Length: 421
Ligand SMILES: Cc1cc2nc3c(=O)[nH]c(=O)nc-3n(C[C@H](O)[C@H](O)[C@H](O)COP(=O)(O)OP(=O)(O)OC[C@H]3O[C@@H](n4cnc5c(N)ncnc54)[C@H](O)[C@@H]3O)c2cc1C
Image 1 (cartoon, rainbow, N blue to C red):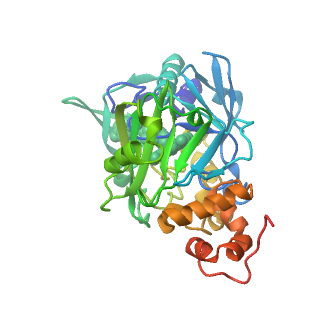
Image 2: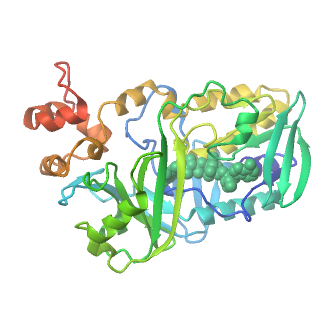
Image 3: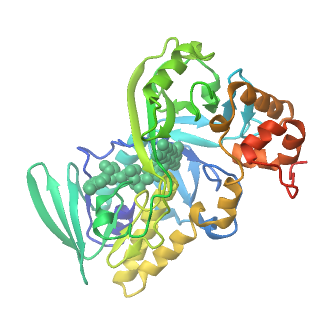
């Protein structure tokens, strides 16, 4: 997005991609374009630092569909010709099949799952149309920022080349060695453990549920995290699980057991594993100032996961405008940093307070307790993301199932409020 926008503004742009072609998304991504401003873990709409998130509206028109990034102007629109899978709700299942729904009904889209390879191929084509030079199978292996220009060393097979540019946008995803070389990560400590993800790509999952819902199974005796299932366009499905690196948990075994032996095994009786994808992620704070000198870092390289597809595209657009501003004598870096610092949930005190109120259900409950909790949520028509709806019903949970409530939210505090009551 940065390249296309910069080229349309008259800059001469070179795009390098280390994969052998543009349009290959190797790193695991669940590929949901979620509508609205809600985050991964909470739906609260914050009014402090996270309030300038990029959101998306989708114009569906067959192969001429368009992604509109809000609140950006129409020249940030992106054409999309790939397949879609509709997502009308997220649903958590307990071991015995009690359910928690994100939304009370399935009447509205929560988002659309895309073919990310098609999105990337389309964006590369738009870059070429805009006049960018595109070089695939080319890795940026070294970078140095100087007073007036950035120098990059590129590796393509056995060939090495040095290029110099007035400005550079680095959008190389998590674990970026280039950021290390430029000292952007200085002081950015890993605060948690490293998390690893594994997803199996499947065909033929036999459940109508997955046509309309992204499903998360809470099955503590099998796995102490959620096992997730959703569509994976075109026409496939994704079954995934997460653990920490160094744990004894074997994710392939977890998923195989789930498909073969859980009460949901018949959903997978006819399905085949077509492939697998995975990634690691360090839990660490985002970089506070991703624009400095002649470089702007955009996307996952400066914030784990939270960036998301729509926001990463928005960052690219804003980065190109910030570069233009700097080249025209303005303070583009300050403009970009101001946008960034006001668009991430991580920087929002309101958001962080919201998601810190309960532990993950499969991490602390056993199968029987999970069934009891989910049955209660279902019987009481409670809906929402767990991080929102459990604390919102804390008084009732402490009154009716104190043992479970304490495992999830700690000892009862007399100040606790029950916003849903
Ligand atoms: C488990 C998981 C699930 C997710 N699910 C969703 C979801 O459902 N919806 C959503 O919106 N977001 C989701 N995300 C987040 C989303 O995937 C990222 O935020 C987004 O892809 C970030 O884009 P990016 O361009 O910064 O990085 P990436 O998508 O990682 O792209 C980086 C690109 O740079 C290339 N590259 C890397 N190094 C070099 C180099 N040295 N030289 C040349 N090229 C290089 C890579 O090959 C790659 O093509 C998820 C993330 C994770 C980890």
